[in-house]
Image (cartoon, rainbow, N blue to C red; front, side, top):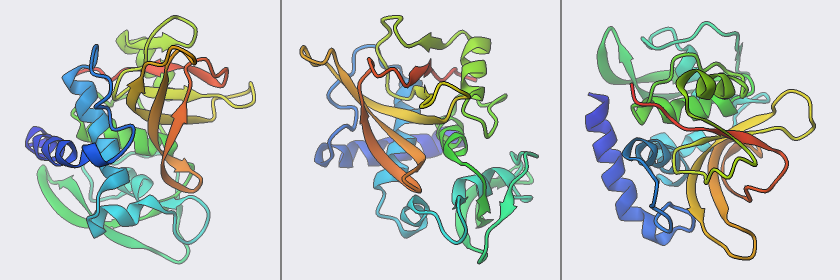
Length: 227
C-alpha cells in the first residue's frame, strides 16, 4: 500500500520539480530508485501546497512542537515508538496518513515536542519504503543504521552523496547534532561538488539547505536500504 502512495508522490514531485533549485534533476548518475523515492518524500514535505502538509513546516506552541514526532508517537499509529516526547502547549492536532489496525487512513495526529530532525528523516525513509527499523530520535542512530545495513559512507571517503541519503552532522565535536535528507547533488569543478538537503528542525522548521561535502561538520551519509 505504501508503494502506491510512493508512486503518486513521485509523480507529483516530478511534475513540480522543474520550478525549484536542488530538486535532484541536476544529478542522476548513481541515484537508486529507493533513494529517489526517499528524497522525493522529503522534498514533497518542503514544497507541497496542500494545507495538510504545508502546516507541518513550522513548529507550533512550545519549543520543538512538531507533526513528525507526533506521527511516530501517536497511540493510534501502528508504527508508534516508545521514545519519550512531551505534549505541546497549546495542544495542536492536524490530519496525517497513518496505519491504524493495519489500515491506511487519514487520522488526527497530535503534535509532540522533542528534537525532531531524526523523526523527519525517519519519516522520509518510512514513506519512501526504505527499511527504518533501528532508527531512533537521535541523529547518531543513522550511523548505526548505516553500519548495520552496509550503507554507511564516512566524510572524506570520496563518496558522492546520493538522493535520499541521510547526512549526519556534528557541529561541535561532541555527540552528533543533526540529520537531514539529501535531495540533490551538483558537480562543481571549483568547490568539488555541492548538495542540497531538506531537513526537519532546521531553523525551527522544515527547510532546504546547501552543503559542501568538504564541510568538516559532516560525519557521513547513511543510504537507505530496501526492506
